Image (cartoon, rainbow, N blue to C red; front, side, top):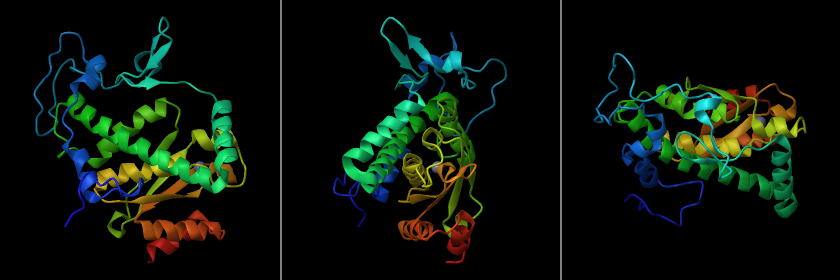
Length: 266
Ligand SMILES: [Zn+2]
């Protein structure tokens, strides 16, 4: 029997498959793209597939630049993105202070776990908003949208927000292994080369986003990090057993290359 959708006893970072299905029932959220709608363009019907429309597009798809993306209201002292979400601009000092304070409070392993779980919840909330927004912006159902199209559209706001750039690798998905390369991690670049992987926010984020997309519960572990002297960070996303194995091998000093090789041969 499937677990109930509102299974509040499930671990925060391991929702049931029934819970993950809920995201796919999100309907088009036209309010979330009202800032992107061109003047005079009406709300079109939601079609099964994205249709090419000649001429001026009803929504501004290319809105990933400062003037369009950051909406400052100096009178209220607020900043929003074009989807109506409140934002805050912070510097590297903020990131270092926040992570340092967390570690002082709960210790290193507690801080890592909290960051991972925060990232995980962030991803779930972000996917819920994103899936509703995508259907409205492209006036089409989710069912027939390509995964790579969804992925790139999801990441673009994070790029302009300063979370870095990424490349994903699904070539071993038949083996249940997904890989992500992350460049210019906001966390690792703030902390610098401290000799330990630090991108737990991102690991949680990738775990939940790919769990929603694949509709099964996945975990994620960072295999190498900018903060260990590499030029970019690498993550593996898979089931919890293999993620735990990868974390163990990393703790034993295995490189990303070694870990991938071991995981591929399981
Ligand atoms: Zn990293």
